[in-house]
Image 1 (cartoon, one colour):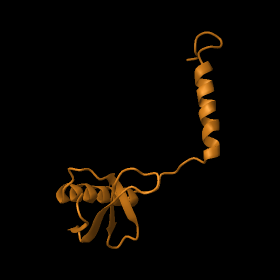
Image 2 (cartoon, helix red, strand yellow; image 1 turned 90 degrees about the horizontal axis):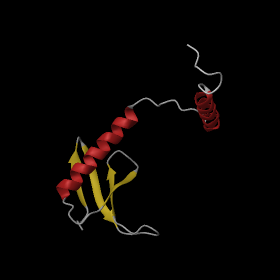
Image 3 (tube, helix red, strand yellow; image 1 turned 60 degrees about the vertical axis):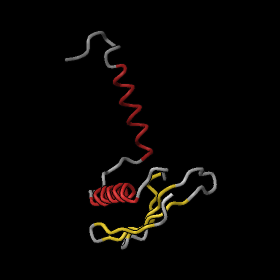
Image 4 (cartoon, helix red, strand yellow; image 1 turned 135 degrees about the vertical axis):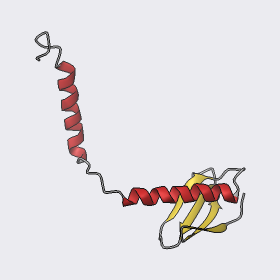
Length: 106
């Protein structure tokens, strides 16, 4: 396994390290923190062939994608209580539309 390391990307400092198995988790994961972000992330399992360059590339791409997704407007979502009613109604009317009365209306 690689030792902990830091790298710079787009004006941010990334601090990367692996953490071994904890609790029910049986594999090691890459964890990283970014300057200016209070969160810590573990997006990838550590592999025996990892190099600083491969980890750096994957983490920089992951974080850039995360920032892009955060910048997008929130997508309105239906309340959970209404989803099953609409889905059930749509499915039942679609399934019976051609069964009653012969030919479908035009």
